[in-house]
Length: 230
Image 1 (cartoon, rainbow, N blue to C red):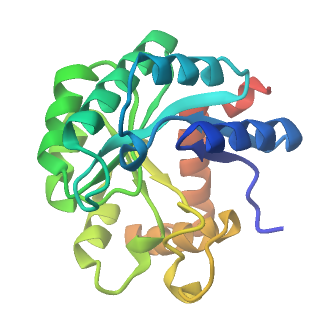
Image 2 (image 1 turned 45 degrees about the horizontal axis):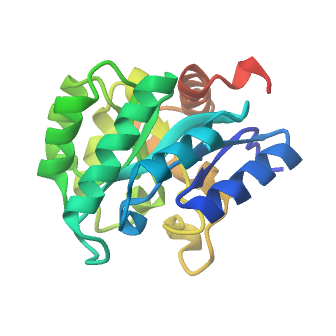
Image 3 (image 1 turned 180 degrees about the horizontal axis):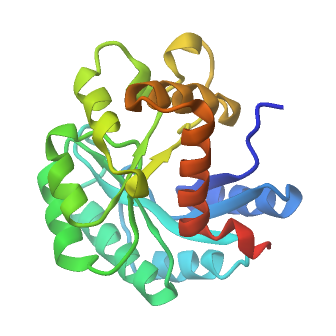
């Protein structure tokens, strides 16, 4: 009803990868990404990579991740996060799939790792949160994806970034059930609310909602291959 026609739902560990797979099999508009989130990366080893590889073999899997580094929450040793990050970069390269990145309070190490290891991959900076590094990220050709937090009044620097990202690098997302857009801030986030974020970003960029919708839909299709069907 809101106009959302495709959803990329994300697995962050074995259980949620299975749930994402089941959702993609049940609903034709749902596709999946599979990864091991940095906050869940403790003890990461080759066995986990093998499990992710098996999930990623599903015909509806369109990306690896989210993976990356999170120094904001002290849940997982940095060495384990780094090992998981590097392994998933290599898995994305092996399988020829885009890479979805989570980075929180870890900008320097995230950018350095991607520069060192992810050359030639489609890198999506999920819930983009490093506006002061935008030019560096664009220079690498990475995709910049904005979630509901771009609508928060305090995030002026993020809004400025959204206004100037080149159209061919721009994505919008929900990060549901988190980061509900400002008009529904007290509610649980849902994929339908991506329209609120898209409307806000369109206004920042001086575009109509229809033009922004067409742009980000085409970008997502180019990345995730919605037109490939299954």
